[in-house]
Image (cartoon, rainbow, N blue to C red; front, side, top):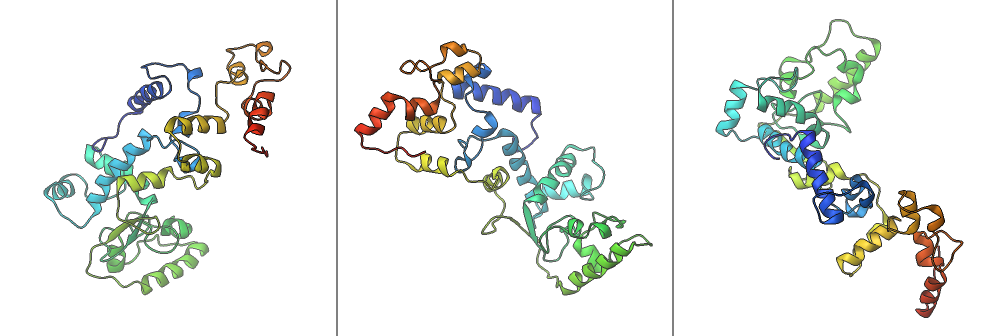
Length: 301
């Protein structure tokens, strides 16, 4: 997974085996046996999932490690060979060679999670890398970028030769050009190589594990799930609680929803007129109410 992008069919086949083993412990399972969507299972625990690795994202994170090494300051033999024989320019048309295609395909995803601290600017994309401000210049100054005749130029080439633009600019592009020139005038290059850091707090050098967390992070924390996983309980109890929290236990109501039981046969055994849902089974059924009262535990919904 760290040397080539796995085809979607291969990843789907691996996920099918993983789902089957997770839910049934066997090689095969039906959709009814998968209690929670696999996409949610792969979410981080603090965001409501189980933290199972998403192979698609993990594959990309491992491949981006190669991009990070390629753009780094070191010059191992393989990098010199790639630069001299295959990748003469970062960006542009999709190349034919395998390594060049890998760089071409993963570079936009890599740039989305990386901030560049430019030194000499030789490996910093002037328009596409996030090296100043809150976003890449191609996004902050979209009108001017649309007039660029060299959209893949480096910061070093712009400082040396200037910005390559079409001869005629729109009024919006002219206004943005003065802002870009102001940014360039305030930038002082150094003799150090460009440094790339993941956009996390605090910023850190690239690692596939940190990149995975960054790509999987949705920004919405699930308070209930955090309480479940912070308890000092056996893993089986936590998993059961997580299924209960997500209303995915194999209650009669859920079995009816999956067309495994008829609606007439889905009521609670102790309450013949009430549908057996998770909430009823653990909160409202007379047996559950008596149990909580015995423990002197007050239930508040």
